[in-house]
Length: 91
Length: 454
Image (cartoon, rainbow over all chains, first blue to last red; front, side):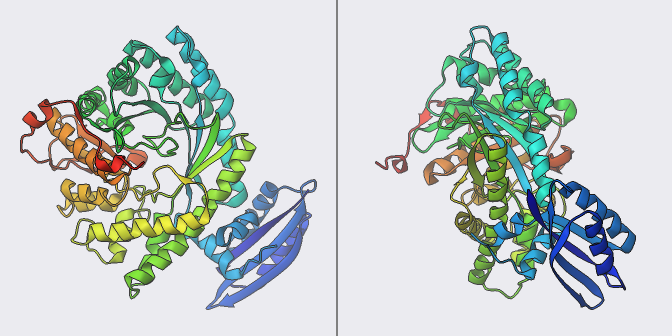
């Protein structure tokens, strides 16, 4: 079964942040379906739609890997199932 | 497919990470109708077994949803059929045995509180009701997780003043029984008017007779989120502010709805209700009082507090009602004192009196909640305060509750720490005017005209 999660990353901007997060996602056999990223006043903000097959990785594994990467590069990385965003703002 | 904007995604993340957005409680209601036995020890065994069987996965499921959505689910709890209706026994010892079984079951399944050690006596006592009420001080004093509620009034029945007086005695006895722990037992005993049967909040949670076999009720939260949106709009008029609060509580409630739907499916339970109450905790930024302050009041208790609270409570309900078709429980802003650090501070500084809190009760739930009063408060004074709160609920056709803590050995102005989510607060003075002759009349205050709606 395929799941989609939304990865958000926030922190001070520096070179290579997007690449590091994307590499971690690829290492977990997950796919980046969509990405948007902005830098404003030195703050880096990134949103990724990431899908994966549950036979290849789990949300917990993805979270753990991204938490490690976030610590290394100084980003606060959140991984949440897409439904909370779809549900929260509209009926 | 629903389109999601980047702003919405970042707003959700910000609400959770920076504004204390959480789901306050996922409460499983369990019917114990099939647990009655002639021998109370056997009843207790069946009660424990059924709770463990039905709620065994509650904590694991809540934790799984917390991980999946990144939203903290703070409390996992169980509410059961009012025990006076289950046990059918006129020996208080039988109820103490069952309370211990409930406590053990709560421990088995890893929850912090279990509600439903309850009786509904608004019109009178059965022998079971009387025995349960008599057992409360020892049952609550001798357990850690059991919560008790007694419904002593309703709009349809009036106020059972005999029950009010008996509960005043029970609260004083519970304070003495748990004196070594700051009379903490009283935080687990609440007296109600118009008690809801599907309330997910402690200490008043129960699984009423109109409920299904097993249900999942969810209490939303989010005072911090509402406070921030109010604080961010200092120039907004009150009608604009009401709109902002409605939009915010819509979002908060949608999270509750999502969790309730999934949790009930995963636990093979019927989805019950979403309780729209804004419930504070002692944490800074998680306070109803801070919302009132952000609206422009120096302290809760300042002139205009009741009006501000009325608007807040109404806007929360309007936003929440659009977000779910399963509203229920208490669904009104809570105004506890010890559980809300800014409220406790206002009380300590003399800005907030019990009389003002009573007025605020008229426009929200739950009423006089988590208020520490002197340990030597006379029984009749306590009964009088409870009756006043019940009268507000009875006449206005709403739920009101009184959770008063006559802290043993403490006097007005002392500071009492109750620990954890119960918080801390000052001992608040009660009026010393006598009411003995009124209380001694006994009997029942008849149902008001408001009860004759057919």
